[in-house]
Amino acid sequence: MIVRHAYRFALDPTPGQVGALLRHAGAARVAFNWGIAQVKANLGQREAERSYGIAEAGLTPSFGWSMYSLRKAWNAAKREVAPWWAECSKEAYATGLDQLARALKNWSDSRRGKRKGPRMGFPRYKSKRKTTPSVRFTTGTIRLEDDRRHVTLPVLGTIRAHESTRKLHRRIAAGTAVVKSATVRREAGRWFVSFTCEVERADRTPSRADTVIGVDLGIKHLAVFSDGRPTAENPRHYDSARRKLGRLSRTAARRLGPDRRTGQQPSKRWQRADAARNRVHYRTANLRRDALHKLTTSLAREYGTIVVEDLNVSGMLRNRRLARVVADAGFGEIRRQLAYKTRWNGGTLEVADRWFPSSKTCSGCRAVTPKLPLRIRMYVCEHCGLVLDRDENAALNLAALVKRHVAGSGPETENGRGADRKTPSCGAGGIEASTPH
Image 1 (cartoon, rainbow, N blue to C red):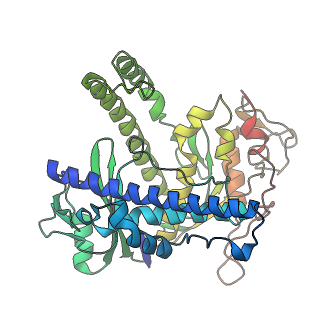
Image 2: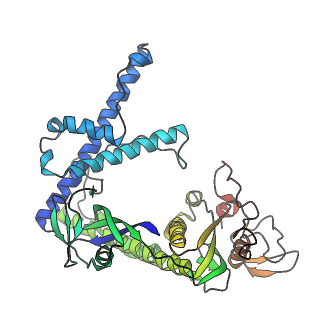
C-alpha cells in the first residue's frame, strides 16, 4: 500500500544558515503579497470598467489565478519587483505563489458553493511580524546524508539535524520511501524540516479484526469504550499549565513590550519572558499531540471497526462554559488520526450521524429518553430499568450501529438509525452538546 507520509526532524542551523532560511521565507512572502496586489488591481480595474458600462468582451483581460499563470507573470516582473531574486532558490517564490493559488481557489469555490465548511474570505497580505517563516522545496537537491545527522536542501546546502534521521534514511535505502518535497518551518524559536514521502507500507490486519468498538468522546473522560477497555482519562494538559502560564504572562506584562501605535520596540527582558511563555504553550501542545497519537494508534492496531460520533466541535466551542476544555481535548484531531490510521492498519472507521441520540438511547431496550441534561451522569431507563453510566451507554449504542456479517453473506458493515442521512443545514451540534451544566 502506497501512502503519503511526512517525517519531521528538528534542525540545528548555523547563524548564517538561519539568515538564509529567513531570506527564503521572506522571498515566499514577497511573492505572495505581489500576487495578491496584481489580482486585486485586476479585479478593481474590471469592476470600474463595468461601472462605466463597458461590455464584458471589452473589459481588461482577467489575471490568471492558476499556479502556472502566477509563476509566468512573476518571472516576467521579478527583475523589477525583486532585484535580489537570484539570492534565493526559485522554490521560495514558488512557495508563495502556490499558497496564493490555493487560497484564491478556496475563496472562489466557497463563493460558488463548491467548498464545504465555513465561508472563506479573500486572501489577505502576509505580515512580516505575524507570519510563520516557512518555505517548501519540490525540486533540486533534497537528500538525507549517510551520517544520518545532516540534510541537504537546494541553495541552503547541508544543515545539521538535531536528531537522528535514521527512521527515514532506512526506508530510502531500502527503496520503500521516495522523498517528494521538503518544508522548512520555524516554530517556537526552532527550525524544523518535514519530508513528504511516498511510503510503501506493508498490509496489516488488526489484532482483533472481527471486533467492533464504540468510542464515546467526552470532557470528563476523554474516551469511553464499549468493550470494557479501561477508560481513557482526560489529561487536561492546558489546565495543568494554566497556573504557570498566568505567572509568566504577568511577568511579560511588567516588561516593556511592543506597541504598534507608537512604534515602541520590545525590550530584551520582554523577549525573554515572552519566549519562556511560548515554550510552555509549545510543550502543552506537544503533550496533547503525544497523548492523542498513543490513544488512536492503540485503537487502530487492535480493532477492526471503530465507531465514533460526528461531533460539531465548532458549535461546542461557542459554548463559553465548555470552549476551553473542548479545545484542550482535541476531538477533531482524534477523528482525523483515526481516519488514516485505520486505513493503514486494515481497519474501518464508521462515523455516526450527528443527530444520533447515543446518550439518550437505552442500550438494552433501544428506548429513547426525551431529555438528558449533561449534569445527569447516570442513565436510568424508564422502560427496562437499566442503570448505566451515560458515557458507557453511549459507547454501547455506537457499537450497535455497525453489525458484523459472516463473510460472503452480505455487506461487511451496515449503518443504522440514519447514520447515512445527510446532516441538516441548521446550526449547532444537537441539544446535548449545547445544554449548560
